[in-house]
Amino acid sequence: PMDEVMSTALQSRTFTLLPASGKRVLLGGPDATVWCDRLQGDEGGTLVARGQVIGTLQRSGLMGQGENPVRFAAGAASASGGGGHVWLEGDARLWQGTRLVRADRLDYEREREVVIGRGNVLTTARAVGKTGPASEFQVRARQLHYDRTAGIATYEGDVTLEDPQAEASCQRLVATMDANGNLVLADMDGGVTLRDRATARVMTGQKARLMVEDGFFEMWGNPVLVKEPSGNQVKADHLQWQRASNTVVVLGAEDNPSETLYHPTKAVPTRRPVTVPTPKPPGRKP
Image (cartoon, rainbow, N blue to C red; front, side, top):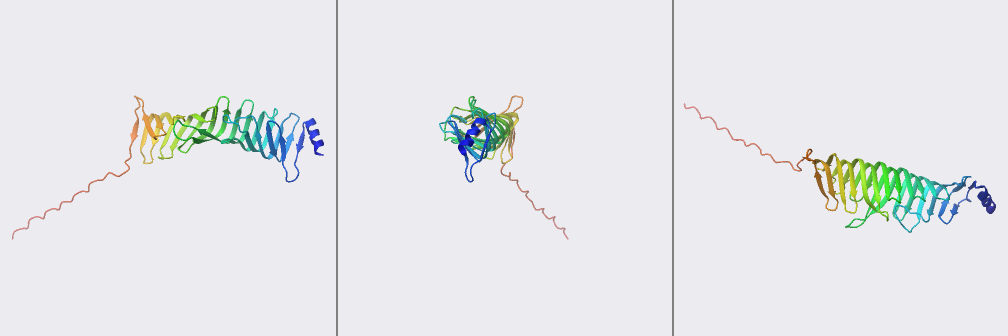
């Protein structure tokens, strides 16, 4: 009988639960609910769920505060310490409202509120500017370390930061979040490339900073290079971009002034040579 099986499992702490055909295993508790195709437990108290794992975590937060529970899904999940530490593998996802953290593997320490992601990391974050409507950012990377208490998310490896206005790429990005999980500051390092969607302008440098609320982007490098679709180029040490007005200002040092390479968009007309007929020599008199 199922009651005897569960009693034995709880006493020995080593068990495997398989559902009846067409059914699923449900594990419920005050802090978490898990649905899966197979549930195992070992002597150390670790629970392992396998097969289309989905569930909810109560009294948890993700990328900011929120009353909604944190939901999760993965190919497999394991938990220890009474659910205080959760591992998700296989298209692993954690989300709360519109906030999402996705990776090949996610480690979630609920007590310290730390999330570590490895492989194909994707996160979403909301940003509220001083003017205009809120916008949504997406960040992709190979690795993520997020500390909710500090409000810091560190991304490493082929990082891209995207919103409807632009796309930036670099090797390391440190994002600062407010208490509500909104992105307020992004520091980028390691070969920064910025593409403005409206003008197709491309800006490159070594380091950059985006102050989201002010809509202000700065870039530094040796050099910073601005390329226009027309082929025009500007080299400088420092670049400032006001996103609202789409205004770009480039600044050079005293010993290294900015340099502009200009390609006219229209060909400069040239005058055609004027042919003057040569007069015939006068005829000889007979």
